[in-house]
Image 1 (cartoon, rainbow, N blue to C red):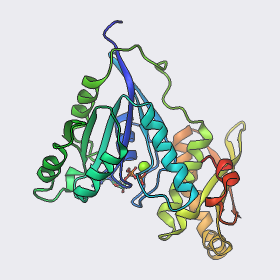
Image 2 (cartoon, rainbow, N blue to C red; image 1 turned 60 degrees about the horizontal axis):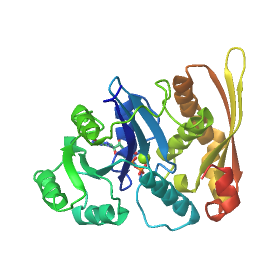
Image 3 (cartoon, helix red, strand yellow; image 1 turned 30 degrees about the horizontal axis):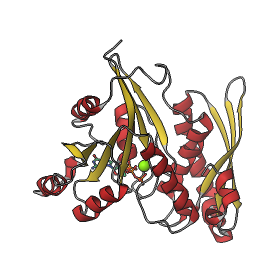
Image 4 (tube, helix red, strand yellow; image 1 turned 30 degrees about the vertical axis):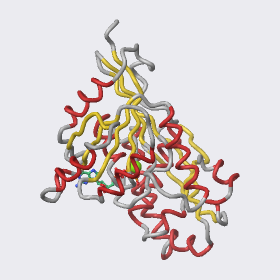
Length: 291
Ligand SMILES: Nc1nc2c(ncn2[C@@H]2O[C@H](COP(=O)(O)OP(=O)(O)OP(=O)(O)O)[C@@H](O)[C@H]2O)c(=O)[nH]1
Ligand SMILES: [Mg+2]
């Protein structure tokens, strides 16, 4: 197959731009967790799309930010790693977001690879915003193409795929056609639990939490999973447990339902809460929790 195309495509942008939503929309599978809060994604996640004429290896990345603690540094290391191996850059901007901030961030990303500006959330873009974004970004030489999409409503995704394939090198597939991602099942399980924290807990708390799957055991009729929710302060433990354990019960129930969908099996999920003081600034803990 001489004209087969294949390559690595990094999805970059500010937190909350819709990067993980886009990855899921492209793959038709919920690989990356999504929440209304910024800084949901912490690890790079590979999503592989294999078609008869091309294979695209997408990488979702954490939103670009200024590091405030070591966890942030690790997150930005993930971004750098993806950047190094990428053939095509997708830079996602929320159509309503600040334009100057985003042009600066794309310049700071400083990738030499051809870039597609993906203007997302056009389903709720304010009048004139899309044109303003286009005017500003057309001045950047690395931007080869600009496309308006809605990752949530799956608008213009096909057009985006065509534009990506145009920029890909002729190359045989890197992965076999059954491979969807690079992360083990335990990673997705911990992410689905972590996602629930973003929805059920107030402002700051999800940013102090990590999830570690300690046991994953396939029994006859179900899969038994034991996981720790790690927080950085004693006071946070009580909040996650809730009144008579009501909060952790709710989190466990919602997570279990999603995990069952993901692995297509009945799940028994046991959650524990542990305090690891200031884990976000501790290299050993960060490593243990997968960062
Ligand atoms: N209206 C609308 N909302 C969207 C669209 N795409 C994503 N969202 C919403 O935007 C929010 C953030 O989406 P994510 O996919 O988590 O964004 P992200 O860029 O991965 O964010 P981080 O992981 O924090 O960097 C979620 O509430 C999504 O439902 C879109 O096309 N239209
Ligand atoms: Mg994300």
